[in-house]
Length: 142
View (cartoon, rainbow, N blue to C red):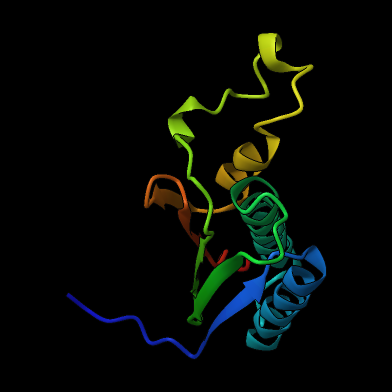
């Protein structure tokens, strides 16, 4: 099994506030830019990260500033791996209805999870839905 040559990593605990989450998002996108990722991939990571952090803060931790979100990120030249865990009750990711189905078009929930799965290359939930691990492969430039 070969190890991935990570060129940047970051791990932190943030309070359940989106202003703090946006600072983490900005730091990650700056690193992607410095490594030379294309804007399309940076946008995809930014969107997936924002949705996952928003879900952890709003749905997982119920906007409780006494609860934290645990964030870790590893970046290589061709891959980014992000893990986010909240202190909430968890949920069953398989129970989230697909917002693209006609019966669910008017529903206000499920869109963030759908976006994450569409923007990222791989997504897995664990710890009863409290932890998400997302990876995005870098697009080869034409």
